[in-house]
Image 1: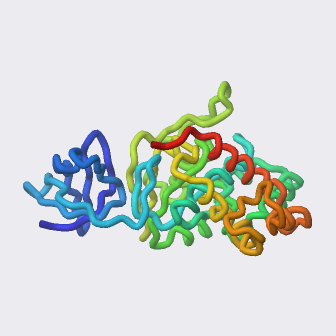
Image 2 (image 1 turned 90 degrees about the horizontal axis):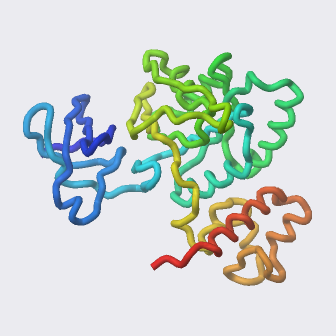
Image 3 (image 1 turned 45 degrees about the horizontal axis):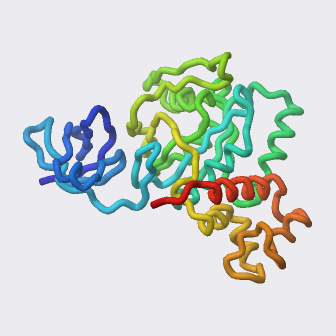
Length: 293
């Protein structure tokens, strides 16, 4: 038997790369029986029937995994938002950050379509995003048309295994084409009726960019917090987690508790007011969620 990595999943087949060779595999019946689904990114043991086909016999332990999109063993999540068409949405960004932090995946924030902004709009947007830089997040400003930031983005990919995440229509596919034109991936226009992009990716597949791998996926089809409990939320906000250590009561949720260091920090501007309001919004969503059984 041999070992490899699943680089593509489509219609019940798993395409395993092993030393440059691609083997089309099916999963063993025991996976279905135990409700285990092989994921793109899985390191697997497979048994080859011939030089093109085989069966996955074992899935190696995962460092992490995402449910939607279904990928595993991701080093970093590249959160892609557009400066315009659709406009940047900080609530949505914070929602993505919570999910990525919860899975202990390093996030990188990328803002595309910078060429569509006027100078005054660029200044406003960068001031808005400076909040995230102060927290410690890396931000890259990009344009697939002018190639602004493309080489910086290429260096971020490096030798990592990354997943793209973000709204549809923000230019994820155009960005991949700018990085590697011979991919010739299909792009699609913004829906004028819905005001958002149309999905162009229908399955999960790794695309190699230089020495790195990018999981090109249909996107995060769910942005709810079904996997989080209320005590999980504070540590997905790094600044709240850090300042929350000074709260008087252990397990403080930074909502209505007295002597809360986080609320005090919001009042004096050490924690961004908008980020804190998003935190409270997400906390309410988790509290209102139906109990899990």
